[in-house]
Length: 289
Image (cartoon, rainbow, N blue to C red; front, side):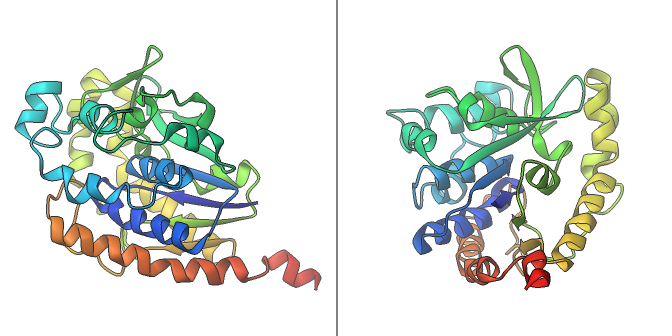
């Protein structure tokens, strides 16, 4: 079974949107898809076959105050208004609706990662748990601490899945994948600096959500360990890491439309490597031959 993961990264996830659009163009299908944060939204559009759907969310809608900024805060008490993104825009009759029926009918398995606010543990939602015109699971996966209030789904509060499982390749392997394509939105070899802004926010977040506060304090350790383990699997031939050579100046909340589009195009150009990876025999098959 061949899997693909998209680790998200806020507006940097335009890169993953480009990778997955190119996969649609080339007819590349995966048995298993797992997405974190904005990467989960990318995966939903990929599985529903909606080529080009995600780019406007990063390039165009992010320029709107209702999406990101003071107006979003006044409406939702969050700097990033997830209700606007995954409700107003994405619901049936919205400006850019997700094709829910096509998503459910798609052949690929889908997992969406979120972090439980109370325990700090990852929660892996199945495609069957997504509800039409109620994309609370996507809100849960994309809920950035500090920037957003906790997202509630079925009586449980959640934050961004990247806090607890930033690159969920181990979950893909445990669910039966033999090989995995991993979409990252930082250049290959990039490591998170200790003492970054997210880690400094661990203490105030910990006052209300102790488990989330601890995850934030260890953010660089968790992420860097995951990247190191991923690179080890890539050296063994079990993983293909698809990452941009640079981020074009785009970060999690960078509202720079031209550079976001440049990053998207870098993603589209990267898909050629996926075709070559899928054409190779797995290492075990090569040894048996």
